[in-house]
Image (cartoon, rainbow over all chains, first blue to last red; front, top):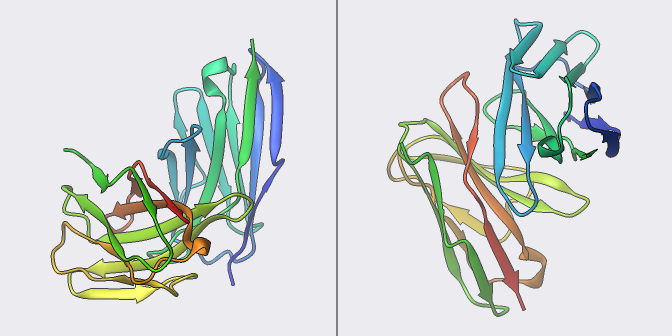
Length: 110
Length: 111
């Protein structure tokens, strides 16, 4: 059974800091991996999708990497801002279904 | 495109009542799924569909029914609501190999 773990569960940083969120999964047989952002009381917003054949994807200040062989992905956020405060969720797709981690709650302090 | 639309946004039910959570997408996505999100448990898959007329169970299907008569719609039915079904429900859709898009959720309370 695929399991997804996100460490740390919570992270608090000062504004302007570069940071890394971690995601690990137990089964490397995946089609893709997706990072989401969730604001309190809101739905999930897709940030980045990495196909299994790719190593990384970038969007603005965000960079996500994928190492299938080791079962790891990282989400790098450059020059963090208070508006980045949210919960970040990692999900892997072994097929048409997503398996989620429990998320990392990020707080960026002004 | 409106994306993934869920209705209602909030609902309060009494134990034993039934209701249908609506989900519609206008992107011609083949895959649709329902998740529930509970504190400490994360998002768990209830039911999913890979196309019209095809549905299957996810991790926590008990107490829920689904059908997919059209590509656009994927309603989730609670047959006899129980307090354990108090949760936030999310519908999601995607096309093969593309990013999943989520609706804004339905907050359900069962008293």
